[in-house]
Structure formats: C-alpha cells, structure tokens
Image 1 (cartoon, one colour):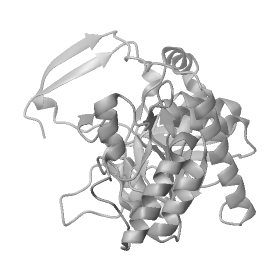
Image 2 (cartoon, one colour):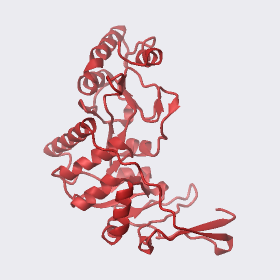
Image 3 (cartoon, one colour):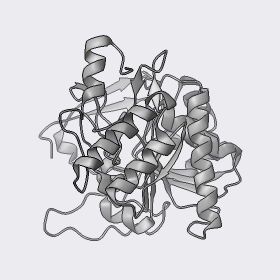
Image 4 (spheres, helix red, strand yellow):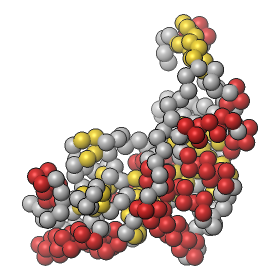
Length: 342
C-alpha cells in the first residue's frame, strides 16, 4: 500500500532463507475467504511479498545481524512451573483428553515461557508442533532433541548462540519452520480449528482468575499484550503461568484480590500455574475458582490474608464477592512501604 518502497538486502542472512515464509493477504471486509490452514505446516500463500517495482525508490545493502535476545537461566521457580505444567498434561493424557503429542502449542515470550517450553525436552511427549507468534531458543532445543517436528510463527527471537546455530545449520531447520504474517498466525478462525494450547505469562492474576499481563501496579507498562488475547480467547486450552511472589523476601505477591489492570478476563482463562501448583478453573463458579487458586497458587506468606479477604467478602455476599474498599490493599501497601507483606 506504500507510495514509495525502500528495500533492504541483508547479506548476513543466507539466501537459503527463501522458502520459509508463507505470505498471504486477505481480501477486504466483508469479502474475506476462509483461511485454508488445517495443520500447523499448511501453506496457503507465497514465499515472497508481491510489490510494484515502479514504487521502489532505493535499495540499501547491510550486513548488520539481528539483535539477539538476552538468555536467562532456568531458576528453581521457573523449573517448578515447568514441572507442574508437564504433570498437568500427563494427567490430561490419562483422562483421555489429550494424546502424547498434545495439540499445537503456542507460547508467549520471556524468561518463564522459554523455561516452561524447555521443560518439554526432558518429557515423554513426542511429535510436538507449534502454532505460535514467536520462536525462541526453546523451540530450536525441542527440534534438536527430536521432540518437535514443526513450528509455525511470525518471527524468531533467539539468543546470540542460538542464532549462530540456526545460520550454520539452516538446511536442517528449513523444512521444520514457517513464518507467516501476524494476521494469519493470530487468526481466531485458525487457532480454534487447530485446537491450539495457549501458554502465556501473567504479571499477576486475582483470586477469580482475571489476568494482568502488561502493567505493573496497574499503571506502568512493562510490555504490550502482543497476541496472547487471540490465543487465550480461541485456544483449546488457555494457560497462564507466573511465579507466586517475587523480589528478595517475597515482597510482591503475584496473586491478588483484584488485578490492578485487566487484559484477560476469567472467561478466557482455563488453567493458572505458579511454582506452588496448578489451579484448574474449568467449569468452576467464581467462589469455587477462588478456593482453588488460593489453595494451589498463592505463596504461603500471603495465603492466610487472601483467604481471610475471600471469607469476609463471601459473608457480605454476591456472585463474585469483593470488598471494594480492600480490593487493592496489597498494591497500596506496596506503594506506601515497598512491600505487600503486612
């Protein structure tokens, strides 16, 4: 749609990269066609972008490498979250709701999500596939280990070492990945058809299952929402992971009476996981969800206070009981004292 086009040719990228893209442009509303993606490796477009050569006003050559992601080590908390997730999936298989190949996986980016996905490398799962937005180091770890056979996304964000490995061994990866426009990777129609399992990271969630994934204390933006909402609303399973508390001395609780900013409502959240355990919210009413979340996901230092809040709110009544005058008490305490602890 641009009037003028400048093309960048990055000579640090191997010519072999041609072929990994699936570029498709939908027609304008209301004439859009069904996206004929029936499997993670389905292709519906071209491996190039069509343009009018007359619009090209310049060509820039560069050898600059993409900026690498900063690798983070798996710590005890993220390892525990990964183990809880794997145990949850194993139980789903025992109950007959999933197979050993699960469903196509989507994972958000960041330290926790990357650690959680890396956990699959040591699991009994096999023939895994991804239908996601971003491919991180963990994706290529799973491909290398033979656990994952194919991955679809819109971009690749990896550490320097992983990036170097991809370039040096691209012939091995080329038939195992595809990159699509975000309108395709995040299509609600495709996500629902494929039965994607969405695994995303929360900054905090509340006792009823509402999730804040973007703002610190409700006002300071930490990151954008990305496409997590597309997957949470339309996936076969919507899972959010986070640590139950953070900072030295556990001064911040990531489970609160009410989230300070709302990105994903309780209606779009199936499973919550912290290093403390798993809260399976499927089919539960608000009061039932609160009991499961407080029991399984809250750090021990905050469990008594949140349970007391919930019990007193229930005594006041309501379908989703709250004490509005106390709902942000932990946040206010943090602002005043630097800690959410009493």
